[in-house]
Image (cartoon, rainbow, N blue to C red; front, side, top):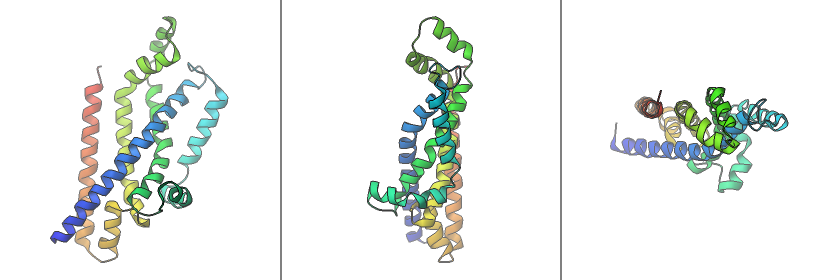
Length: 217
């Protein structure tokens, strides 16, 4: 493989890492509170409010039912309005973020539901406020599971970021399509696949390591 291709591969890897990192930060800022609301506003939750819970659940389910490639195309006007363009790495962050928010919300909801309700009841009996229960009971108890779940989301984002290359989103997917497929370069395609595999393995290892360190059981 030529030095030029190696340079392009490193550049594409950097673009993928940027897309995944920024999308994860933005999506987590909305998705984690969303997951908390889904749990706390549910029946018998500490902030029980079924109308809000049902509305949030409906929105989450609706967004999760849209295939990423369709979502990416459907929100092109929104992407263009937010970042000034519908192609490139920056533009790809918008649909990646929007697609990840409901995914993170459901993953966090699952993790929080694993917290024994007896611990929550004990906090309530001692006069803890809902906010105190969220910060001092739910999140600390569920943190190892949340980290493990978010690791899954990051890996899914890597795959979706590669898919974004199909419409000029940049990154490893764009490199594989433009050089590996359109220019009939199987070596580039193979190199891209290898890099993606190594990247996913590294993310999974880091996520597992952090989750184990947070697990005090």
